[in-house]
Length: 170
Image (cartoon, rainbow, N blue to C red; front, side, top):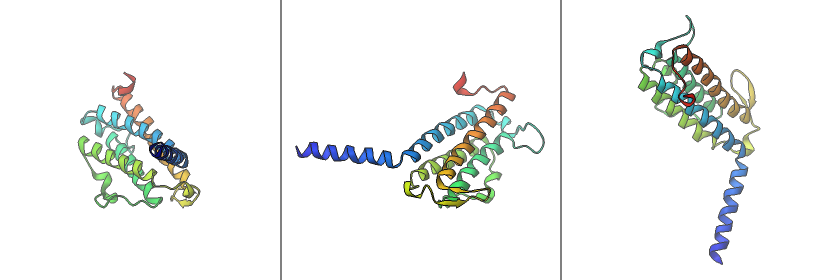
């Protein structure tokens, strides 16, 4: 009987935690899906295609991927989560080479997915000045998700322009 009571308490705790973090869990799930597809695209481009840009003054493939990584860190930083000490925000855009860029993006993805779950439900309404807008932390999490989705679309267009088929649509 004691084991059943302990099991019931454990299940209740898990369900309560999941409900308490419903927004964070939902955003994390959608963001992880977008991030996974961006990584698939990053891996599908050849090394040479990383320098391709659709027009002068527009981000190249590599620059777009680094922009996403920088955006992840920036939005998390504004919500109170400074980037890891080994991340140099001022020189993030100088990283070169397909392998290095993908590693940088993956690291930023893992960082923000972890930090999303550190935002407490009661803090979702706390206002934050993101520099481009003032919104609450929930808005910041949604901006993070939307930013990754926006650049997934950009990279799909870049891929199609270069004869690269997004891996999930083959």
